[in-house]
Image 1 (cartoon, helix red, strand yellow):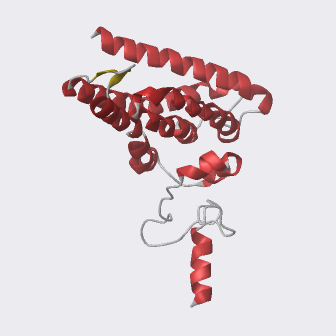
Image 2: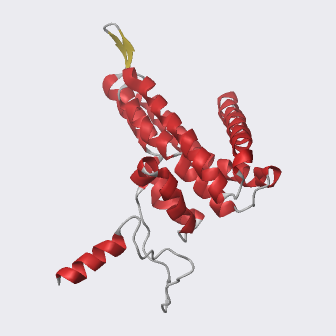
Image 3: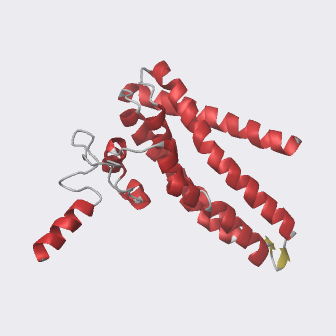
Length: 219
């Protein structure tokens, strides 16, 4: 019984000796032939180099990454911001201002929707620019790069729950390092092309974000 338990735990490990997610060793069943989804965003932050390899080999779809991974993590910022605005409020030096609840709700919903859309737009940009930097077009891999690189940004938004500590969300810039590690591996880009690729991708994403947000305010 102990041996059975230990074998079961070995298979369930994040980086197991026998990787069930290896596409070269598919599971043959009468139905869905892939193992259950793994929800382990912490590993991409702690061991990003090895975790990108696991992510690359995982059989997944855009939908399976959106639910539950992106749907849950992208909600951290909007929820934290809603709580921070209504419970603590804005201000300082003994003066506090609590915005109307309607404003906070609309802001949370819009920011959540933009966060969900931003991942897909980022993936389109990453995939579209891959050939320019001698990479390989692969939208699923581009989507993986976008989704898991955003992990640091989403988690850092927990600081929005205390408006006075929002500046600490700068730790989310760690996501650029994740992007730097993930792009070359998943998009098959040589290291000498990686820096330029990342620079163009980041710039394009910032421009796209400005157009989306600016258009929303204009309306």
